[in-house]
Length: 348
Image (cartoon, rainbow, N blue to C red; front, side, top):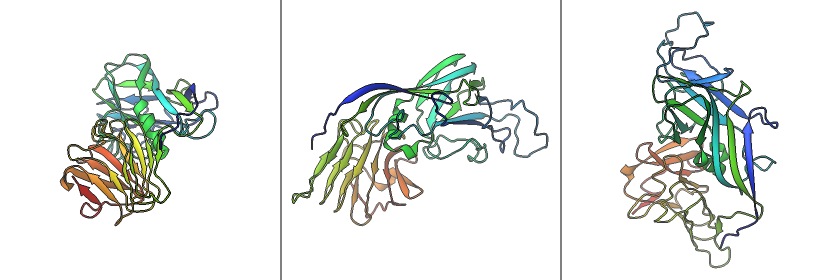
């Protein structure tokens, strides 16, 4: 099936707390020197590799969990930005670019921005997040989404296009970003509580005539289909029969793609690698296949290499498959809590 191009309209969507009725910004920071305290109401957020502590001394009791030399890490998320309402990013929308703007109030060392992979709230603390945030491919992405040099006061712009494209394919995976320090000269930026909070600017093409990257198999008596995607984010539907679904190809290798694969009925094979290479294995958590209907004992995952090359983690009712130990996410397999490398996979 050849995808339909459709009609597109250029637009710029902006999200900032209190502007044009938007109220979905969530932000806070956590402090290793006061590990059980939350800072969700703070008007500025601090990121520091060895912060001297919060200046508010309203908590005077000695606490073995406190550490006067603890680091600080910041968290930021924009909720309710994906959907079908006016001003939201639709599933049929092409995201050309996404820029995160921070108003820096105190200059310092560079920042490293990571996609969060687990939930948090403004009441989160250093301890509730497991001794701070770890960029381990499980709590936060193992690869940075953006990295800055020395950070000066004023407006700092960060390219977060890859994050937005990933979350567009799976809005429930929008856990926002973690800001981790690169040194002991801390950086402060205004929070959503300040009136000068973070702003997200997304340039889009609104697609008004269907999915531009959707491919489906036949539902007639032919049944068995072989479906290929390519570069970019694709949606493949196998429908009836025993189908083979490959969201990318040997050239694109799934780099910075998030492909959604649905086999339908029958014994389906989902291609996540070939004899020469793994697919979706170079972009950290920013590229992977979403397999929506894997049936244990019937469907197969085609993988490059051997079982020892992979690791898996269950989250809710889904399994996240990594190449390496929590290094590169290559697939989210929905509806199952474990992959049996002996019976559910074919290695090539």
